[in-house]
Length: 233
Image 1 (spheres, rainbow, N blue to C red):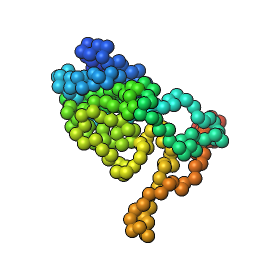
Image 2: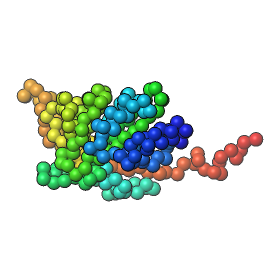
Image 3: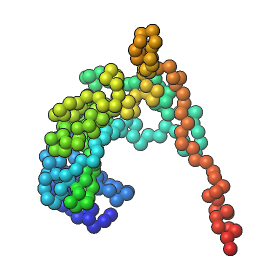
Image 4: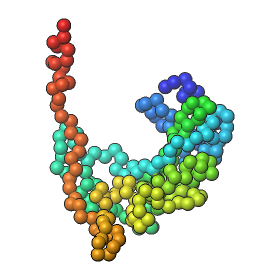
């Protein structure tokens, strides 16, 4: 990792202490986890204080860690069991009284400092709340407006304080959140033009649930050690 990144990490550790926990990286990037209650204060400091100067928010995205780390298929050959989202039609919808796993949903923020030419990633988990809720950072970075709407639309994460939190990619009458891992890949409804009604109409999805073919590792003679540069000369 570069000296510039390590210098930034040292400044963050000195300024925020245990409020920000560094996440191990295998690709030389700087990522921190923080409590969602500390988000606004830390975001404001990262933007305004000269040691950091993260004046630009590049992206906000949601993450669903449901089933994270579990293996649903083998990698050496195709599996007959398939991927559950490809064969399960019914979504799992929790009652309002139910809770999510503490680290199921996360919100990730990608920051850029133009003056220091550094990047930083922040991650917060939404906790057990149903629906998941975090504070909006629109008042810190105005570019968060559409990003937070996208995370709400696709993951169902609410952003407290957002000025106009509504769907941005799916239709107004869409039910559910398509990037949640308990949402069926084939969806629940399909849309078509109904000539008799003279308008677009919704109907139950007619796509047949099927087993998806997972990643398969195949032998390839082009990478055989016996053939590499053997005939050169």
